[in-house]
Amino acid sequence: MQGQDGERDRHGARNGGDASPGAPGGAPDGASAGTAAGSPDRAPAETSAEAPATTPAGVPAGTPAEVPDAEPRRGRPRSAAAERAILDAVIALLEAGEPLAGLSIERIARTAGVGKATIYRRWSDKEELFVDVVRDMEPDDPPVSGTEGLADLRVMLESLRTRGLAQRSSALLHNIFAQMKSHPKLWNEYHGMVIAPRRLALLAAVRRAVAAGELRDDLDVELIDDLFVGPMLVRTVHRPDAPLPDDLADRIITALLQGLAPAGRV
Image 1 (spheres, rainbow, N blue to C red):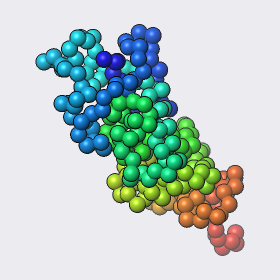
Image 2 (tube, rainbow, N blue to C red; image 1 turned 90 degrees about the vertical axis):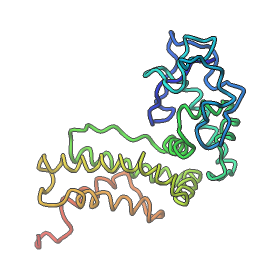
Image 3 (cartoon, rainbow, N blue to C red; image 1 turned 45 degrees about the vertical axis):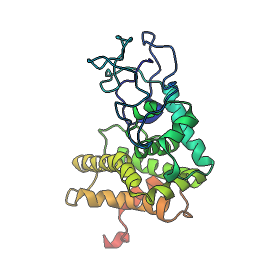
């Protein structure tokens, strides 16, 4: 039996660790020849034909040093190569014209050259996997200070602009988003894992700007947030033909801080 993975975070292969020198096992993760029994789109049961016989303690017979899938050791290195192969397999299938709805975990595992259990150790279902595929194709979220107000807000607005550019330049990414919106479960998963955390980060930056005296303190922070984010979303989502110049984030911030009324009427 091969070494098991550590507890998975939700950041895809970009955060996957390589095996440490002391990690057991020499075969690549997921090289099992079998596939799990049951539905191809849900996690396999413990009675799967792929699972080896276990002792009463839950440890596979003949490999007492191994740790069972149900209780992975926290911090145990994962196979970055296996995760990369899985993400690349989904992208390759989509590029070949396969619709999101038509992809099964079994088909993805076969294309990636891994066992289904290798996928389920990282993603609970294919919706969660697809979200990580989209995040892998999008530009990375930029780091922010977490202490600045307007400065962090500007960085996040610029990130919205670059993601808009990425969707325009990638027909595949644009097509994936179109398909996601027609599948409520997948779109809800993306919203909860990606959009909602980004919105909370923007709101936190607005609150810091208000606390620092950079923005008015007599307005609802959600309204202020919408005033900053709204113009960028209109340009990137609702007006795909609108220009997205490099200084767009700065122009939005400046216009809002200066106001729209003529100088003599302020």
